[in-house]
Amino acid sequence: MPKSDSTHNQFANKAQAWSARFSEPVSDLVKRYTASVGFDQRLAAADIRGSLAHADMLAACGIISQADHAAIERGMAQIQQEIADGRFVWSLDLEDVHLNIEKRLVELIGDAGKRLHTGRSRNDQVATDIRLWLRDEIDVQIDLLQQLQGRLARLALQHADTILPGFTHLQVAQPVTFGHHLLAYAEMFGRDTERLADCRKRTNRLPLGAAALAGTTFPIDRERVARTLGFDEVCRNSLDAVSDRDFAIEFCAAAALIMTHVSRLSEELVLWMSPRVGFITLADRFCTGSSIMPQKKNPDVPELARGKAGRVHGHLMALLVLMKGQPLAYNKDNQEDKEGLFDTADTVRDTLTLFVDMMGGVTVHTAAMREAALQGYATATDLADYLVKRGLPFRDAHETVALAVRHCEAARCDLADLSLAQLQGFHPSIEADVFEVLTLEGSVAARNHLGGTAPQQVRHQAQALLERLEGPGATGHS
Image (cartoon, rainbow, N blue to C red; front, side, top):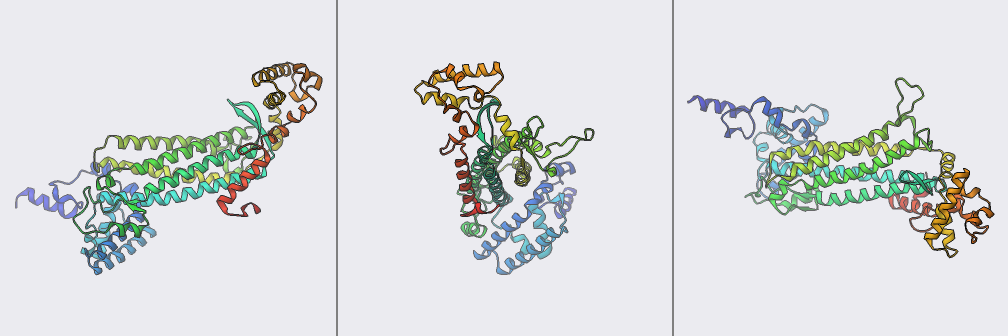
């Protein structure tokens, strides 16, 4: 036998499932560079689910025997148990989760294990695994977002009457209620939930059956597999099914927006906890101290969440760049889709889990909020509105109140501290009832419309949200 043939046969006997085509083994560096089993083994449960559904279909269509089907089910059950017990041996030589599981299956049940791959490719197999895994992750994150909304709604109910300054440009603008402020984030997280639910629809389509890129010559029943695995429908084009990762990109985009909203809330929590502001205190379990300054209590969880938002944003950009230059159909580039996707899901899940707990234990310092709302002439717009209701054009009213504010700044007092005579000096239509609109309570109560900051509206919106999340009567318990 020629030396080259001998080398070939020795190689073929011990190497990868595809190695018969090659005359020399892959170098160790290439193995490490191209292998994905170090991170894609987390798809094992999804891979086994997909394989069992595929085997069921092959048997139903008469492509494999019932005996082979039973052997595959038996072998997969043992593999599942080995993985759960931590006894499964993952091999770098076998590249990925699929070949590792297939090799072990063949060891356990022989040729029946080799027949499992009939009518499919690793291309449609991995696309199916990712969709199964991501679908479950989306369900977990939707639940966490709804839990977080519930925490915010309950805290809003407790503080429907608590007043703090509302800001624009980080300058005092108008008084708002703390409950109203919290419900703004509940709305953001509600839209995040909608985006994830919408993304799930496009994720929940079955690629299996597309095979490598063109479909298969075997008489398969893709709809049966879709029903078995709970997919809403099948991918309608085999080239598209194996090659695109837009569902993963869409998830990462939704995740980036979730982390953007978390980061905005984190920024406020950090600001509010500063002793210079003192609006809230976070529970100790979400904070750390200083190695040198014994008085410090640092809001580490919101600070780190704010930082991790950038990490998630980066994964989105990496996935977009990964896909932008790929021709049809599958390319090895797509192996790079997983680590960023996995890390995005892990980061969002852990962050939301922490925030659900953290927002349930916020201590609110109402006196500090009220004191801050008394600074910065927060009721100036209310005085302008008062003048408009007495016939003054808004621009004239705006100028009149601006002059009054300049006077108060010089006198170091608030608008409500001025006497009626002083106020009438700025405009004669001002009467004694003006002091009702210059109070913080009067200001927020006057905005009693859908979406307004009035305590009555805050209670209504918070209760309605809790009932949507938890059902009728949800606000009857804490």
